[in-house]
Amino acid sequence: MINQGKKLRKRRVFSEEFKKARVKEYEKGELSVLEISRLYGISFQAIYSWIYKYSIYNKKGLIIVDIKTSSTQKIKELKDQVKELERVVGQKQLNIDYLEKMMEIAKDELNIDIKKNFDPQQSTGSLKTDKK
Image (cartoon, rainbow, N blue to C red):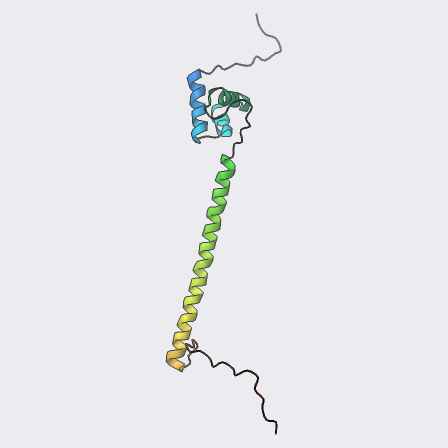
């Protein structure tokens, strides 16, 4: 009999080994639910039902929060921040080296000791002075 007007959906049946392998990929952190769904063309609901059925860690009634994508994004942001801070520290070190060299030149050529290594005399406080 020919079906008229209705499109039949193909129903795919996955083996138990296939399902367990996808759950293991998820548990090891190799792939997220989103990645498994896109890679194999499987619905989220099917993957979550497999996780509840075959997972050692995730059981029915527990809420699964897949934070792999957000944690990788956070790591990327932190690496970018580290690079920026290293760049700033490098610039500051160059400034310090430049200023120390300038002080050394001033001392050698102009006999000006910008780095004073002696303690200034402490004031004697408020002494009475004679007014004339």
